[in-house]
Length: 107
Length: 121
Image 1 (cartoon, chains in turn red, cyan):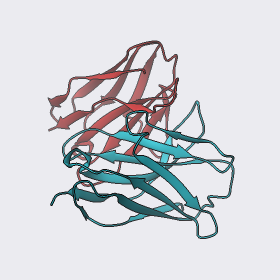
Image 2 (cartoon, helix red, strand yellow):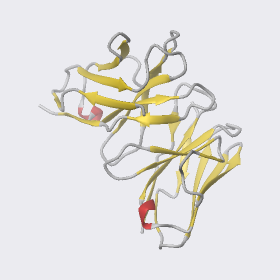
Image 3 (cartoon, one colour):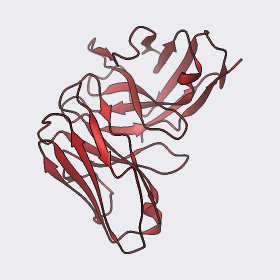
């Protein structure tokens, strides 16, 4: 099975900061990587698919990059409403559909 | 707008079987476009995919849970189901139902609000 490892597991940042979250795959997954945002008490929401394509309605301060085994989610200009946990998901080889362990972002 | 709604018991005793329903509104389980899935999240932890199916006979389970899990559907009522046998405390989690696109995109685009299931005597 492909293992997904996110770093850091948690981080604190200030409003306006540029935040970078990394997701590494245990083997190459090309660009088959999605990112989700989950706010406390809510279901996850899709942010980015195909490693870099912004889902409809997602603010442009979110961006994704990477291919192969290393991927990043960048928030450029952190906003208070971005307080959430963020998960990567590989879609290259399934089953199983694997998520990273999550990154908790606080302000 | 697609909506999913989970229902079922909030408390299950150890060794018992969990049964959950997911009612789907705004889309049809009979359509062949999407997959339908169960995902769970233990308190304070990450997301674990349980299994997915579509209307063409594709049905896949997480190997870690396969022995204990059954996913089925009643397309006439637009409801799908999750059964997990031999529940233990480690199965305590928020259980979500969701819709996802086929591979390789596999994006989960609509989710239920989740239902907390606690395993305790």
